Picture 1 (tube, one colour):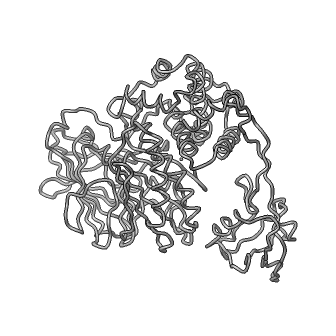
Picture 2: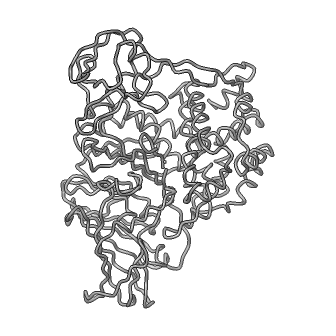
Picture 3: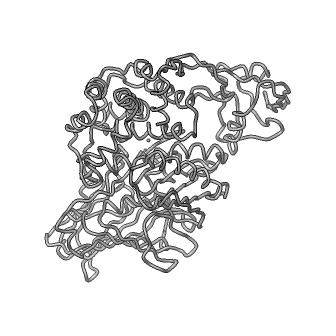
Length: 613
């Protein structure tokens, strides 16, 4: 899972399988979700029970799903839970906790039913990351993350699941699952067990999708844009370019035959819509939430970084993972020590493949790594990553979670550099991950405490020293030492800044009541404002004769990124209730940042093996 913009993290499920006596039977769990029966923004769900011999059984809705690293308690969105025997009579039900219901007379149980509320229109009341949650907008969009709607009976997670979704003919379900029902108002999906069902989201909306193939993989891009601002056809080309590059980069890694990207675009002009922007990863799908008001170029750029991260999770933890993930406990989850690999190496690959495949330059890649060093420095740099990872659900460790995308990626980079140096450029961290995938793979997990020993056996003692010192140990990483191995040194780099934002701190804000954009009076303004004579508190009404407000503020910020020094510009402002037009020339602020550049040509061959090999 990766969160961006306002809230920026990864989530995934795992299509892993364990043998069980239950899976050898033909018995299955059947669940029906009725999108035709939505009332009061709630969806009715019925789950038919298997044959139960005990007098009591507990039904669970997940407390947490794999990879979110947040106890979200999805059971709190369930109303009016009831249990029935075969004659339709009620059975006694008692609430065990937020996510669990105990049913008495379970040996007579035929089914349970309940109503499911969505999470999007009440996001102010909880902290569930939007791509992990659900949307229910009757006749328009239902974002069906299955863990929000369907639960499991104790001891029966490994039975086959058959999920039937009844829906209006005007809505089409985008998913990587195969619909075995030919009608246009009934979808039937079969999965091998509960974990597989949880790994397969479905987004119902008016059909807006595009498909293409990358080698032998079929890719589905589905879009829900409430105001028809964007569509799948304008997003698909950039996705195809990116995913082709990813497949080329991965080489030997096998992956799914079908992959779906479900994109929900949030209407920022309404109060009750999703505001947690980023993505939730699954083995065969990614669920994305982004603001609809973004321009298409900016949207595609954000999707490139976010979706590529999620796609690379097919390496880890889908293929390479610990016992805690293989046997995930949805009711009482246990965390693995190795977020540095699941999230960090994944984030590193999401950047490395872009320079490797020529999507960004070498300097762009090094600047990204410099940015991660800067961001990581704001976190606890002496907290061992393994300790943070194993305890990430509780404070103070959960406050350090975002460092998995910063220092976690840098850990991956340093390991890559060590392996490249010791192998004279012939091997890197991707080779290590390929070896680990052969050692373990989808069906076999590793023990947390044994992973470092296995990695050292496949690489070099220096790799083990790094892991012990900087990953399970609390010693900060001397990044310049590792960059120097590749002929890269630090340097203060001047680059054009943005007139409206610096280091994630904006110079402008919005009045939520009027939607007006105003210059913040509490911030020292840059040269763009001072040269034009724009002051704190001024309301920006137009730029170059185009009106701007909250509805199109992203367009203003995006357009400013291509402004040139000394270009003519006109800005209509309102100051103290009086409008005036300021004419002048743009002055682009300069950002001085510590970056890295290749300076040692004697290391060029090794450096190219690292970045291009």
